[in-house]
Length: 623
Image (cartoon, rainbow, N blue to C red; front, side, top):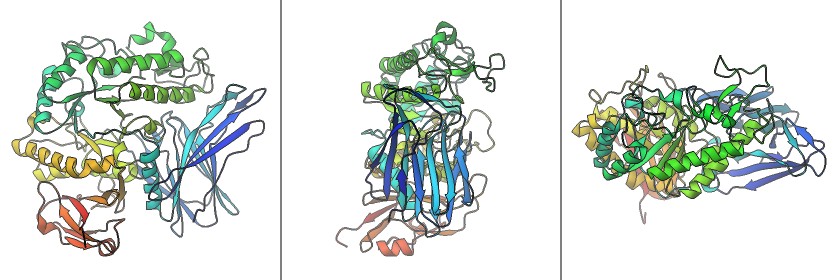
Protein backbone atom coordinates (compact mmCIF):
# COMPACT_ATOMS: atom_id res chain seq x y z
CA UNK A 1 0.00 0.00 0.00
CA UNK A 2 1.32 3.43 -0.94
CA UNK A 3 1.41 5.77 2.04
CA UNK A 4 3.41 8.66 0.56
CA UNK A 5 1.40 11.47 -1.02
CA UNK A 6 3.42 13.61 -3.43
CA UNK A 7 2.53 17.25 -3.94
CA UNK A 8 4.04 20.25 -5.62
CA UNK A 9 4.64 23.32 -3.45
CA UNK A 10 2.41 26.40 -3.57
CA UNK A 11 4.04 29.80 -4.13
CA UNK A 12 1.96 32.90 -4.75
CA UNK A 13 2.71 34.59 -8.05
CA UNK A 14 4.22 31.56 -9.79
CA UNK A 15 2.73 29.17 -12.31
CA UNK A 16 3.98 25.85 -10.94
CA UNK A 17 3.84 22.69 -13.04
CA UNK A 18 4.77 19.56 -11.05
CA UNK A 19 5.49 16.32 -12.90
CA UNK A 20 5.54 12.94 -11.18
CA UNK A 21 6.78 10.06 -13.32
CA UNK A 22 6.52 6.43 -12.22
CA UNK A 23 9.74 4.44 -12.75
CA UNK A 24 8.85 0.71 -12.93
CA UNK A 25 11.25 -1.71 -11.29
CA UNK A 26 11.05 -5.12 -9.55
CA UNK A 27 11.28 -3.87 -5.95
CA UNK A 28 9.17 -0.85 -5.02
CA UNK A 29 7.26 2.23 -6.11
CA UNK A 30 9.72 4.84 -7.38
CA UNK A 31 8.73 8.29 -8.62
CA UNK A 32 10.76 10.99 -10.31
CA UNK A 33 9.48 14.36 -9.13
CA UNK A 34 10.09 17.48 -11.23
CA UNK A 35 8.85 21.04 -11.00
CA UNK A 36 8.85 23.95 -13.46
CA UNK A 37 8.10 27.50 -12.30
CA UNK A 38 7.13 30.20 -14.80
CA UNK A 39 5.29 33.50 -15.15
CA UNK A 40 3.10 34.78 -17.97
CA UNK A 41 3.94 38.40 -17.21
CA UNK A 42 6.11 40.40 -14.85
CA UNK A 43 8.87 38.84 -12.78
CA UNK A 44 9.35 37.29 -9.35
CA UNK A 45 12.53 36.57 -7.39
CA UNK A 46 12.48 32.95 -6.22
CA UNK A 47 14.64 32.00 -3.23
CA UNK A 48 12.91 29.01 -1.64
CA UNK A 49 11.25 26.45 -3.92
CA UNK A 50 11.37 22.77 -2.97
CA UNK A 51 10.73 20.38 -5.85
CA UNK A 52 8.27 18.20 -3.95
CA UNK A 53 6.38 17.82 -0.69
CA UNK A 54 6.05 14.23 0.50
CA UNK A 55 3.26 13.70 3.03
CA UNK A 56 3.51 10.61 5.20
CA UNK A 57 0.83 9.13 7.43
CA UNK A 58 0.71 8.76 11.19
CA UNK A 59 3.13 6.58 13.09
CA UNK A 60 6.56 6.57 14.66
CA UNK A 61 9.04 7.34 11.91
CA UNK A 62 12.79 6.81 12.19
CA UNK A 63 15.11 8.82 9.93
CA UNK A 64 18.37 7.32 8.66
CA UNK A 65 20.96 9.16 6.60
CA UNK A 66 24.73 9.36 6.03
CA UNK A 67 27.21 12.12 6.79
CA UNK A 68 30.26 12.46 4.58
CA UNK A 69 33.70 14.05 4.40
CA UNK A 70 37.02 13.25 2.82
CA UNK A 71 37.87 9.64 3.62
CA UNK A 72 34.76 9.34 5.76
CA UNK A 73 31.89 8.84 3.36
CA UNK A 74 28.69 6.95 4.24
CA UNK A 75 28.89 7.33 8.01
CA UNK A 76 25.45 6.33 9.33
CA UNK A 77 23.14 8.56 11.38
CA UNK A 78 19.77 7.71 12.92
CA UNK A 79 17.04 9.63 14.75
CA UNK A 80 13.41 9.07 15.69
CA UNK A 81 11.53 12.01 14.19
CA UNK A 82 9.84 13.92 17.00
CA UNK A 83 10.92 17.45 16.05
CA UNK A 84 11.90 19.18 12.84
CA UNK A 85 14.88 17.64 11.07
CA UNK A 86 16.94 19.59 8.54
CA UNK A 87 19.40 17.83 6.25
CA UNK A 88 21.44 19.55 3.58
CA UNK A 89 24.80 20.96 2.54
CA UNK A 90 26.30 24.37 1.78
CA UNK A 91 29.66 23.27 0.37
CA UNK A 92 28.52 23.40 -3.26
CA UNK A 93 29.12 19.73 -3.97
CA UNK A 94 26.46 17.23 -3.13
CA UNK A 95 28.24 14.80 -0.79
CA UNK A 96 30.63 17.11 1.05
CA UNK A 97 29.05 17.06 4.50
CA UNK A 98 26.13 14.72 3.91
CA UNK A 99 24.87 12.39 1.20
CA UNK A 100 21.68 13.49 -0.62
CA UNK A 101 19.62 10.57 0.66
CA UNK A 102 17.16 9.98 3.49
CA UNK A 103 15.28 6.83 4.48
CA UNK A 104 12.23 7.17 6.74
CA UNK A 105 10.99 3.91 8.26
CA UNK A 106 7.72 3.51 10.17
CA UNK A 107 7.43 1.16 13.11
CA UNK A 108 5.67 -1.44 10.91
CA UNK A 109 8.68 -1.51 8.57
CA UNK A 110 7.17 0.56 5.76
CA UNK A 111 9.86 2.80 4.27
CA UNK A 112 10.12 5.89 2.09
CA UNK A 113 13.42 7.07 0.57
CA UNK A 114 13.92 10.65 -0.63
CA UNK A 115 16.95 11.57 -2.76
CA UNK A 116 17.54 14.99 -4.37
CA UNK A 117 19.21 14.53 -7.75
CA UNK A 118 21.43 17.57 -7.50
CA UNK A 119 25.20 18.08 -7.44
CA UNK A 120 25.13 21.45 -5.66
CA UNK A 121 23.53 22.60 -2.43
CA UNK A 122 20.41 20.61 -1.56
CA UNK A 123 17.98 20.28 1.32
CA UNK A 124 15.61 17.74 2.86
CA UNK A 125 13.37 19.16 5.60
CA UNK A 126 11.24 16.83 7.72
CA UNK A 127 8.42 18.37 9.75
CA UNK A 128 6.10 16.50 12.12
CA UNK A 129 2.42 17.48 11.67
CA UNK A 130 -0.67 16.23 13.53
CA UNK A 131 -1.42 13.52 10.95
CA UNK A 132 2.14 12.40 10.14
CA UNK A 133 5.15 14.03 8.48
CA UNK A 134 5.78 16.51 5.69
CA UNK A 135 9.07 16.17 3.83
CA UNK A 136 10.23 18.97 1.53
CA UNK A 137 13.17 18.28 -0.77
CA UNK A 138 15.06 20.01 -3.55
CA UNK A 139 17.58 22.79 -4.07
CA UNK A 140 18.80 24.57 -0.94
CA UNK A 141 17.43 28.09 -0.40
CA UNK A 142 20.77 29.14 1.11
CA UNK A 143 22.45 31.83 -1.04
CA UNK A 144 20.12 31.02 -3.93
CA UNK A 145 18.02 33.51 -5.86
CA UNK A 146 16.50 33.23 -9.33
CA UNK A 147 14.35 35.70 -11.23
CA UNK A 148 11.46 34.03 -13.02
CA UNK A 149 9.98 36.02 -15.90
CA UNK A 150 8.31 35.28 -19.26
CA UNK A 151 10.75 33.27 -21.32
CA UNK A 152 12.91 32.45 -18.31
CA UNK A 153 11.35 29.63 -16.35
CA UNK A 154 13.06 27.76 -13.54
CA UNK A 155 13.28 23.97 -13.69
CA UNK A 156 13.96 22.69 -10.20
CA UNK A 157 16.34 19.75 -9.70
CA UNK A 158 14.65 16.34 -9.76
CA UNK A 159 13.92 14.47 -6.55
CA UNK A 160 13.46 10.69 -6.44
CA UNK A 161 11.03 9.14 -3.97
CA UNK A 162 11.00 5.37 -3.39
CA UNK A 163 8.51 3.46 -1.27
CA UNK A 164 8.06 -0.18 -0.25
CA UNK A 165 7.03 -2.42 2.62
CA UNK A 166 10.64 -2.64 3.84
CA UNK A 167 13.64 -0.35 3.75
CA UNK A 168 15.60 -2.97 1.80
CA UNK A 169 12.96 -3.09 -0.94
CA UNK A 170 12.66 0.71 -1.08
CA UNK A 171 16.42 1.21 -1.45
CA UNK A 172 16.72 -1.62 -3.97
CA UNK A 173 13.85 -0.02 -5.87
CA UNK A 174 15.68 3.31 -6.01
CA UNK A 175 18.89 1.67 -7.28
CA UNK A 176 17.02 -0.48 -9.79
CA UNK A 177 14.99 2.45 -11.11
CA UNK A 178 18.19 4.49 -11.43
CA UNK A 179 19.70 1.74 -13.58
CA UNK A 180 16.64 1.44 -15.81
CA UNK A 181 15.61 5.07 -16.14
CA UNK A 182 18.36 7.45 -15.00
CA UNK A 183 21.97 6.40 -15.56
CA UNK A 184 23.66 6.04 -18.97
CA UNK A 185 24.57 2.51 -20.00
CA UNK A 186 27.75 1.04 -21.48
CA UNK A 187 27.89 -2.30 -23.28
CA UNK A 188 31.24 -3.22 -21.73
CA UNK A 189 32.50 -3.41 -18.16
CA UNK A 190 36.28 -3.01 -18.57
CA UNK A 191 38.82 -4.06 -15.99
CA UNK A 192 41.17 -1.14 -15.39
CA UNK A 193 44.44 -0.14 -13.77
CA UNK A 194 45.00 3.42 -12.52
CA UNK A 195 48.48 4.75 -11.79
CA UNK A 196 47.64 7.20 -9.02
CA UNK A 197 48.16 5.87 -5.49
CA UNK A 198 51.49 4.04 -5.88
CA UNK A 199 53.08 6.75 -8.04
CA UNK A 200 51.00 9.95 -7.81
CA UNK A 201 52.44 12.66 -10.08
CA UNK A 202 55.94 12.62 -8.60
CA UNK A 203 57.01 9.10 -9.57
CA UNK A 204 55.11 8.50 -12.79
CA UNK A 205 56.65 8.75 -16.24
CA UNK A 206 56.21 7.13 -19.62
CA UNK A 207 58.42 4.12 -18.95
CA UNK A 208 56.76 3.38 -15.59
CA UNK A 209 53.27 3.72 -17.01
CA UNK A 210 53.97 1.48 -20.01
CA UNK A 211 55.67 -1.17 -17.88
CA UNK A 212 52.55 -1.44 -15.72
CA UNK A 213 50.28 -1.35 -18.79
CA UNK A 214 52.14 -4.36 -20.15
CA UNK A 215 51.55 -6.28 -16.93
CA UNK A 216 47.88 -5.23 -16.97
CA UNK A 217 47.57 -6.82 -20.40
CA UNK A 218 49.15 -10.05 -19.13
CA UNK A 219 46.71 -10.08 -16.20
CA UNK A 220 43.72 -9.91 -18.55
CA UNK A 221 42.89 -6.26 -17.90
CA UNK A 222 41.46 -3.96 -20.54
CA UNK A 223 42.51 -0.41 -19.68
CA UNK A 224 45.36 1.62 -18.21
CA UNK A 225 44.30 5.03 -16.86
CA UNK A 226 46.72 7.96 -16.66
CA UNK A 227 45.80 10.03 -13.62
CA UNK A 228 47.15 13.50 -12.71
CA UNK A 229 50.68 14.49 -13.66
CA UNK A 230 50.51 14.72 -17.46
CA UNK A 231 49.66 18.45 -17.78
CA UNK A 232 50.96 21.87 -16.77
CA UNK A 233 54.17 22.21 -18.71
CA UNK A 234 57.58 20.50 -18.92
CA UNK A 235 58.64 20.43 -15.28
CA UNK A 236 59.64 17.22 -13.53
CA UNK A 237 58.90 18.77 -10.12
CA UNK A 238 55.54 20.39 -10.85
CA UNK A 239 52.69 19.72 -8.41
CA UNK A 240 49.47 18.77 -10.16
CA UNK A 241 47.22 20.70 -7.73
CA UNK A 242 48.77 24.08 -8.52
CA UNK A 243 48.57 23.81 -12.32
CA UNK A 244 45.09 22.33 -12.79
CA UNK A 245 43.47 24.10 -15.71
CA UNK A 246 46.54 24.27 -17.94
CA UNK A 247 45.43 21.28 -19.98
CA UNK A 248 46.98 22.55 -23.21
CA UNK A 249 50.42 22.53 -21.55
CA UNK A 250 51.74 18.96 -21.24
CA UNK A 251 54.54 17.65 -19.08
CA UNK A 252 56.94 16.42 -21.75
CA UNK A 253 59.65 15.80 -19.16
CA UNK A 254 57.59 12.97 -17.69
CA UNK A 255 55.94 12.05 -20.98
CA UNK A 256 58.18 13.03 -23.92
CA UNK A 257 55.55 12.06 -26.52
CA UNK A 258 52.75 13.77 -24.63
CA UNK A 259 49.45 12.18 -23.64
CA UNK A 260 48.63 11.30 -27.25
CA UNK A 261 51.94 9.53 -27.77
CA UNK A 262 51.58 7.69 -24.49
CA UNK A 263 48.08 6.61 -25.48
CA UNK A 264 49.37 5.18 -28.77
CA UNK A 265 52.14 3.31 -26.96
CA UNK A 266 49.64 1.99 -24.40
CA UNK A 267 47.49 0.52 -27.15
CA UNK A 268 50.59 -0.97 -28.73
CA UNK A 269 51.27 -2.59 -25.34
CA UNK A 270 47.92 -4.34 -25.63
CA UNK A 271 45.46 -2.34 -23.50
CA UNK A 272 43.19 0.63 -24.10
CA UNK A 273 43.98 4.06 -22.70
CA UNK A 274 42.14 6.19 -20.15
CA UNK A 275 42.88 9.62 -18.73
CA UNK A 276 42.09 11.87 -15.73
CA UNK A 277 41.08 15.52 -16.01
CA UNK A 278 39.79 17.93 -13.35
CA UNK A 279 38.42 20.07 -16.12
CA UNK A 280 36.40 22.49 -13.96
CA UNK A 281 39.28 23.41 -11.65
CA UNK A 282 41.81 26.25 -11.87
CA UNK A 283 44.94 25.90 -9.73
CA UNK A 284 46.54 28.90 -8.06
CA UNK A 285 49.49 28.80 -10.50
CA UNK A 286 47.52 27.93 -13.63
CA UNK A 287 48.15 30.23 -16.57
CA UNK A 288 44.58 29.87 -17.83
CA UNK A 289 43.24 32.29 -15.20
CA UNK A 290 45.39 35.16 -16.51
CA UNK A 291 44.96 34.23 -20.14
CA UNK A 292 41.18 33.81 -19.93
CA UNK A 293 39.82 35.79 -16.97
CA UNK A 294 36.36 35.68 -18.54
CA UNK A 295 36.15 31.96 -17.61
CA UNK A 296 36.89 32.34 -13.93
CA UNK A 297 34.15 31.91 -11.29
CA UNK A 298 34.26 34.65 -8.66
CA UNK A 299 32.22 35.90 -5.70
CA UNK A 300 33.26 39.47 -5.03
CA UNK A 301 29.92 40.89 -3.86
CA UNK A 302 29.50 38.74 -0.73
CA UNK A 303 31.33 40.11 2.34
CA UNK A 304 30.47 37.00 4.34
CA UNK A 305 32.18 34.71 1.84
CA UNK A 306 35.91 33.98 1.86
CA UNK A 307 37.35 31.67 -0.75
CA UNK A 308 40.34 29.36 -0.47
CA UNK A 309 42.93 32.08 -1.14
CA UNK A 310 43.82 34.50 1.64
CA UNK A 311 45.11 37.05 -0.87
CA UNK A 312 41.93 36.93 -2.99
CA UNK A 313 38.71 36.32 -0.99
CA UNK A 314 36.48 36.23 -4.10
CA UNK A 315 38.50 33.50 -5.79
CA UNK A 316 36.51 30.27 -6.25
CA UNK A 317 39.06 28.25 -8.18
CA UNK A 318 36.95 26.90 -11.02
CA UNK A 319 35.64 27.59 -14.51
CA UNK A 320 32.08 28.92 -14.32
CA UNK A 321 29.98 26.71 -16.55
CA UNK A 322 27.03 29.00 -16.02
CA UNK A 323 28.75 31.01 -18.73
CA UNK A 324 28.43 29.99 -22.40
CA UNK A 325 32.16 30.62 -22.75
CA UNK A 326 32.85 28.37 -19.76
CA UNK A 327 30.74 25.55 -21.19
CA UNK A 328 32.45 25.85 -24.57
CA UNK A 329 35.89 25.85 -22.93
CA UNK A 330 35.17 22.70 -20.92
CA UNK A 331 33.62 20.85 -23.86
CA UNK A 332 36.48 21.80 -26.18
CA UNK A 333 39.03 20.71 -23.56
CA UNK A 334 37.48 17.30 -22.94
CA UNK A 335 36.59 16.66 -26.56
CA UNK A 336 40.12 17.54 -27.63
CA UNK A 337 41.70 15.36 -24.94
CA UNK A 338 39.55 12.33 -25.76
CA UNK A 339 39.98 12.81 -29.51
CA UNK A 340 43.76 13.13 -29.53
CA UNK A 341 44.32 10.27 -27.07
CA UNK A 342 41.56 7.94 -28.27
CA UNK A 343 40.63 7.47 -24.61
CA UNK A 344 38.15 4.78 -23.66
CA UNK A 345 37.87 5.96 -20.03
CA UNK A 346 37.66 9.52 -18.69
CA UNK A 347 37.98 10.22 -14.96
CA UNK A 348 36.38 13.62 -14.26
CA UNK A 349 37.52 14.91 -10.87
CA UNK A 350 36.53 17.95 -8.77
CA UNK A 351 38.60 18.70 -5.66
CA UNK A 352 37.15 21.93 -4.29
CA UNK A 353 34.09 23.39 -2.57
CA UNK A 354 32.33 26.03 -4.70
CA UNK A 355 30.17 27.00 -1.73
CA UNK A 356 27.40 29.37 -2.87
CA UNK A 357 28.93 29.61 -6.34
CA UNK A 358 29.76 32.31 -8.86
CA UNK A 359 28.01 35.70 -8.57
CA UNK A 360 29.44 37.36 -11.69
CA UNK A 361 26.64 38.94 -13.72
CA UNK A 362 28.66 39.08 -16.94
CA UNK A 363 28.46 35.30 -17.32
CA UNK A 364 24.86 35.06 -18.47
CA UNK A 365 23.54 34.07 -15.05
CA UNK A 366 22.35 36.16 -12.12
CA UNK A 367 24.26 36.83 -8.93
CA UNK A 368 22.16 34.30 -7.04
CA UNK A 369 21.92 31.36 -9.44
CA UNK A 370 25.51 30.91 -10.63
CA UNK A 371 25.95 27.51 -8.97
CA UNK A 372 22.62 26.31 -10.35
CA UNK A 373 23.61 27.33 -13.87
CA UNK A 374 27.08 25.81 -13.40
CA UNK A 375 25.68 22.37 -12.74
CA UNK A 376 23.09 22.66 -15.51
CA UNK A 377 26.02 23.51 -17.79
CA UNK A 378 28.10 20.60 -16.53
CA UNK A 379 25.26 18.14 -17.16
CA UNK A 380 24.79 19.53 -20.68
CA UNK A 381 28.49 19.27 -21.54
CA UNK A 382 28.75 15.70 -20.26
CA UNK A 383 25.80 14.67 -22.42
CA UNK A 384 27.38 16.31 -25.47
CA UNK A 385 30.72 14.63 -24.77
CA UNK A 386 29.18 11.17 -24.47
CA UNK A 387 27.22 11.71 -27.70
CA UNK A 388 30.44 12.58 -29.54
CA UNK A 389 32.37 9.65 -28.04
CA UNK A 390 30.03 6.67 -27.52
CA UNK A 391 33.02 4.40 -26.78
CA UNK A 392 33.86 6.45 -23.69
CA UNK A 393 33.21 5.39 -20.08
CA UNK A 394 32.92 8.54 -17.95
CA UNK A 395 33.68 8.31 -14.22
CA UNK A 396 32.70 10.92 -11.65
CA UNK A 397 35.19 11.59 -8.85
CA UNK A 398 35.35 14.44 -6.33
CA UNK A 399 38.02 14.15 -3.65
CA UNK A 400 36.83 10.58 -3.62
CA UNK A 401 33.06 10.40 -3.18
CA UNK A 402 32.13 14.01 -2.37
CA UNK A 403 29.96 14.67 -5.43
CA UNK A 404 27.93 11.49 -5.63
CA UNK A 405 24.27 12.05 -6.49
CA UNK A 406 21.56 10.95 -8.91
CA UNK A 407 21.82 14.27 -10.73
CA UNK A 408 25.40 13.84 -11.90
CA UNK A 409 25.01 10.06 -12.18
CA UNK A 410 22.37 10.71 -14.79
CA UNK A 411 25.14 12.04 -17.06
CA UNK A 412 28.13 9.77 -16.29
CA UNK A 413 28.52 6.01 -16.14
CA UNK A 414 29.87 5.50 -12.64
CA UNK A 415 30.86 7.29 -9.45
CA UNK A 416 34.06 6.86 -7.40
CA UNK A 417 33.38 6.08 -3.74
CA UNK A 418 36.33 7.48 -1.75
CA UNK A 419 40.06 8.15 -1.87
CA UNK A 420 40.86 5.68 0.95
CA UNK A 421 39.96 2.12 0.00
CA UNK A 422 41.26 -0.34 2.60
CA UNK A 423 39.01 -3.37 2.61
CA UNK A 424 37.09 -2.70 5.82
CA UNK A 425 36.29 0.86 4.74
CA UNK A 426 35.36 -0.24 1.21
CA UNK A 427 32.67 -2.44 2.73
CA UNK A 428 31.32 0.46 4.81
CA UNK A 429 31.06 2.48 1.61
CA UNK A 430 29.42 -0.33 -0.35
CA UNK A 431 26.76 -0.79 2.31
CA UNK A 432 25.78 2.87 1.96
CA UNK A 433 26.10 3.51 -1.76
CA UNK A 434 24.22 0.35 -2.72
CA UNK A 435 21.11 1.93 -1.19
CA UNK A 436 21.19 4.63 -3.89
CA UNK A 437 23.07 3.41 -6.97
CA UNK A 438 22.99 0.26 -9.12
CA UNK A 439 26.06 -1.95 -9.36
CA UNK A 440 27.13 -0.61 -12.77
CA UNK A 441 27.20 2.95 -11.41
CA UNK A 442 29.48 2.10 -8.46
CA UNK A 443 33.26 2.33 -8.97
CA UNK A 444 36.15 1.98 -6.55
CA UNK A 445 39.71 0.72 -6.35
CA UNK A 446 40.56 -2.48 -4.56
CA UNK A 447 42.81 -1.80 -1.59
CA UNK A 448 45.56 0.37 -3.06
CA UNK A 449 49.29 0.67 -2.59
CA UNK A 450 49.79 4.23 -1.34
CA UNK A 451 52.92 6.25 -2.01
CA UNK A 452 52.04 8.70 0.78
CA UNK A 453 51.19 8.07 4.41
CA UNK A 454 47.75 7.02 5.65
CA UNK A 455 47.37 5.09 8.92
CA UNK A 456 45.13 2.44 7.32
CA UNK A 457 46.56 2.29 3.80
CA UNK A 458 49.44 -0.04 4.54
CA UNK A 459 49.17 -2.56 1.70
CA UNK A 460 52.59 -3.81 0.57
CA UNK A 461 52.57 -6.59 -2.04
CA UNK A 462 55.91 -7.87 -0.73
CA UNK A 463 54.39 -8.80 2.66
CA UNK A 464 50.75 -9.32 1.67
CA UNK A 465 49.34 -12.82 2.14
CA UNK A 466 47.37 -14.38 -0.70
CA UNK A 467 44.35 -14.64 1.58
CA UNK A 468 44.38 -10.90 2.33
CA UNK A 469 44.95 -10.19 -1.36
CA UNK A 470 41.91 -12.31 -2.22
CA UNK A 471 39.81 -10.39 0.30
CA UNK A 472 40.88 -7.02 -1.13
CA UNK A 473 39.79 -8.11 -4.60
CA UNK A 474 36.55 -9.82 -3.62
CA UNK A 475 35.50 -6.75 -1.63
CA UNK A 476 35.09 -4.79 -4.89
CA UNK A 477 33.92 -7.57 -7.19
CA UNK A 478 30.17 -6.87 -7.12
CA UNK A 479 30.54 -3.58 -9.03
CA UNK A 480 32.98 -1.76 -11.34
CA UNK A 481 36.51 -1.62 -9.95
CA UNK A 482 40.15 -0.94 -10.74
CA UNK A 483 43.57 -1.78 -9.37
CA UNK A 484 45.92 0.99 -8.20
CA UNK A 485 49.00 -1.06 -7.39
CA UNK A 486 52.54 -1.34 -8.68
CA UNK A 487 51.66 -4.23 -10.97
CA UNK A 488 55.30 -4.68 -11.87
CA UNK A 489 56.03 -5.65 -8.24
CA UNK A 490 53.37 -8.35 -7.93
CA UNK A 491 54.75 -11.83 -7.37
CA UNK A 492 53.93 -14.63 -9.84
CA UNK A 493 51.40 -16.05 -7.37
CA UNK A 494 49.74 -12.65 -6.92
CA UNK A 495 49.56 -12.13 -10.68
CA UNK A 496 47.86 -15.49 -11.08
CA UNK A 497 45.38 -14.51 -8.39
CA UNK A 498 44.50 -11.35 -10.33
CA UNK A 499 44.00 -13.40 -13.53
CA UNK A 500 41.77 -15.91 -11.76
CA UNK A 501 39.61 -13.24 -10.13
CA UNK A 502 39.33 -11.42 -13.46
CA UNK A 503 38.03 -14.57 -15.11
CA UNK A 504 35.39 -15.00 -12.39
CA UNK A 505 34.39 -11.35 -12.71
CA UNK A 506 33.94 -11.51 -16.47
CA UNK A 507 31.98 -14.76 -16.39
CA UNK A 508 29.74 -14.31 -13.35
CA UNK A 509 29.62 -10.62 -12.34
CA UNK A 510 29.92 -8.40 -15.41
CA UNK A 511 26.79 -9.88 -17.08
CA UNK A 512 24.74 -8.90 -14.02
CA UNK A 513 26.03 -5.32 -14.19
CA UNK A 514 24.88 -5.14 -17.81
CA UNK A 515 21.48 -6.52 -16.79
CA UNK A 516 20.58 -3.79 -14.25
CA UNK A 517 22.10 -5.63 -11.30
CA UNK A 518 21.40 -4.30 -7.80
CA UNK A 519 23.49 -4.92 -4.67
CA UNK A 520 21.62 -5.58 -1.40
CA UNK A 521 23.24 -5.80 2.03
CA UNK A 522 22.55 -9.07 3.83
CA UNK A 523 23.95 -7.88 7.17
CA UNK A 524 24.28 -4.75 9.25
CA UNK A 525 26.77 -2.11 8.08
CA UNK A 526 30.48 -2.77 8.71
CA UNK A 527 32.30 0.29 10.03
CA UNK A 528 35.87 1.46 9.83
CA UNK A 529 38.26 1.02 12.76
CA UNK A 530 36.76 -2.23 13.98
CA UNK A 531 33.16 -1.07 14.44
CA UNK A 532 29.92 -2.43 13.05
CA UNK A 533 29.31 -5.81 11.43
CA UNK A 534 32.41 -8.00 11.42
CA UNK A 535 31.27 -10.54 8.81
CA UNK A 536 29.44 -8.42 6.23
CA UNK A 537 27.74 -10.02 3.25
CA UNK A 538 26.22 -8.55 0.10
CA UNK A 539 24.15 -9.96 -2.73
CA UNK A 540 24.27 -8.89 -6.38
CA UNK A 541 21.12 -9.85 -8.25
CA UNK A 542 19.80 -9.39 -11.77
CA UNK A 543 16.66 -11.31 -12.57
CA UNK A 544 17.17 -14.89 -11.38
CA UNK A 545 20.98 -14.61 -11.20
CA UNK A 546 22.61 -14.11 -7.80
CA UNK A 547 26.20 -13.70 -6.55
CA UNK A 548 26.94 -13.33 -2.83
CA UNK A 549 30.13 -11.84 -1.38
CA UNK A 550 31.13 -12.28 2.28
CA UNK A 551 34.24 -11.00 4.07
CA UNK A 552 35.37 -11.97 7.59
CA UNK A 553 36.95 -8.83 9.04
CA UNK A 554 39.07 -8.61 12.17
CA UNK A 555 36.95 -9.75 15.10
CA UNK A 556 34.67 -11.99 13.02
CA UNK A 557 33.45 -15.25 14.62
CA UNK A 558 34.41 -18.63 13.22
CA UNK A 559 31.02 -19.19 11.60
CA UNK A 560 28.23 -17.11 10.09
CA UNK A 561 24.87 -17.60 8.39
CA UNK A 562 24.09 -15.62 5.24
CA UNK A 563 20.45 -15.39 4.16
CA UNK A 564 20.03 -14.58 0.45
CA UNK A 565 17.10 -12.51 -0.75
CA UNK A 566 14.65 -12.81 -3.62
CA UNK A 567 14.91 -16.55 -4.31
CA UNK A 568 11.96 -18.45 -5.79
CA UNK A 569 10.44 -20.25 -2.76
CA UNK A 570 9.94 -23.70 -4.29
CA UNK A 571 12.99 -23.81 -6.54
CA UNK A 572 16.10 -25.77 -5.59
CA UNK A 573 19.36 -23.81 -5.63
CA UNK A 574 22.98 -24.89 -5.86
CA UNK A 575 25.49 -22.82 -3.89
CA UNK A 576 29.04 -22.83 -5.32
CA UNK A 577 32.28 -21.19 -4.23
CA UNK A 578 33.92 -19.06 -6.92
CA UNK A 579 37.50 -18.05 -7.55
CA UNK A 580 40.96 -18.87 -6.26
CA UNK A 581 41.47 -20.01 -2.70
CA UNK A 582 37.93 -21.38 -2.50
CA UNK A 583 37.75 -24.42 -0.20
CA UNK A 584 34.58 -26.52 -0.08
CA UNK A 585 35.07 -27.29 3.61
CA UNK A 586 34.10 -23.64 4.34
CA UNK A 587 30.65 -24.11 2.78
CA UNK A 588 28.21 -26.08 4.95
CA UNK A 589 25.11 -25.42 2.81
CA UNK A 590 25.73 -26.46 -0.82
CA UNK A 591 22.03 -26.77 -1.76
CA UNK A 592 18.56 -25.81 -0.58
CA UNK A 593 15.20 -24.53 -1.65
CA UNK A 594 14.61 -20.83 -1.94
CA UNK A 595 12.49 -20.96 1.19
CA UNK A 596 15.11 -22.87 3.19
CA UNK A 597 18.03 -20.69 2.11
CA UNK A 598 16.07 -17.53 2.84
CA UNK A 599 15.00 -18.73 6.28
CA UNK A 600 17.83 -20.95 7.51
CA UNK A 601 20.57 -19.36 5.42
CA UNK A 602 23.90 -20.47 4.00
CA UNK A 603 26.40 -21.44 6.69
CA UNK A 604 30.00 -20.37 6.14
CA UNK A 605 32.87 -21.52 8.35
CA UNK A 606 36.46 -20.35 8.53
CA UNK A 607 37.73 -23.92 8.47
CA UNK A 608 40.31 -23.35 5.74
CA UNK A 609 41.59 -20.09 7.21
CA UNK A 610 40.15 -18.05 4.34
CA UNK A 611 38.58 -14.64 5.08
CA UNK A 612 36.66 -13.99 1.87
CA UNK A 613 34.14 -15.87 -0.23
CA UNK A 614 32.26 -15.34 -3.45
CA UNK A 615 29.21 -17.57 -3.84
CA UNK A 616 27.19 -18.35 -6.95
CA UNK A 617 23.57 -19.08 -6.02
CA UNK A 618 21.99 -20.67 -9.09
CA UNK A 619 18.67 -22.36 -9.66
CA UNK A 620 18.90 -26.07 -10.49
CA UNK A 621 16.92 -26.69 -13.70
CA UNK A 622 13.96 -29.01 -13.35
CA UNK A 623 14.14 -29.15 -9.57
